[in-house]
Image (cartoon, rainbow, N blue to C red; front, side, top):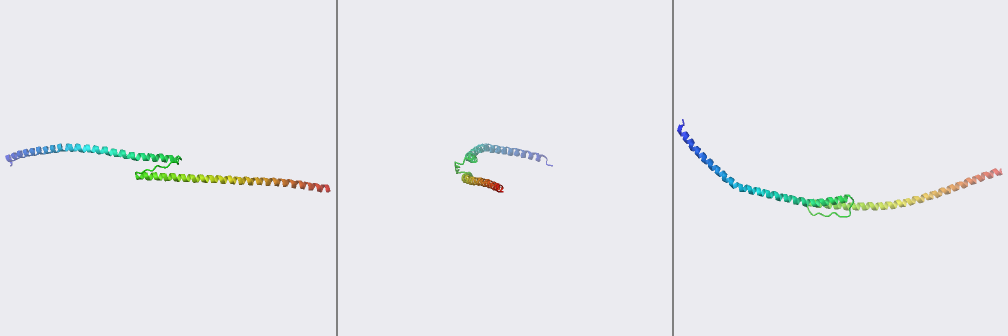
Amino acid sequence: FFGDDLSAGDEGQGARGREWLAQLQEMIDRVAAEARPVARDVAVKAAELAAVAGGVVAWASQELAVPVRKLGHTADAIASGRLGSTVAPIAAPAELAQLSESLERMRRVLVEKIQTIEELNVGLEAKVTERTKELQAANQELGEALERLKSAQAQLVHSEKMASLGQLVAG
């Protein structure tokens, strides 16, 4: 039905398709060639960004680690009873500054409470000493009273015996 016309048309279209594919391949090759330096630049920039980010992370962790270590040492000193030195203030970051202020307030309150307890202990010891002296004096008075009572009892018994003996002799 289509005969020779179709085969002649197919050859023309095939040649045009191959030509079009060749042009397309050239365009792809050209775009790829232009994209290679851009891809290299992107890779270099990404590596630079990663290095900078790593540096920032290292710097930030160092900036946080030093004050946190100092606060840790101070907290250990407070926990072991060394309350004499103050907590060094930290300016930044704000959270660590607040933590150092809280730790210093806690240290001051502990010092005040310990002083109050020591003062109360001194007062209590004085009261115990005073009360002990009072009890010793009362005990001594009771001992003397007991001795007087025993002496009076002995005299009474002796007087009773003499009276009984007098009655016997009188008869």
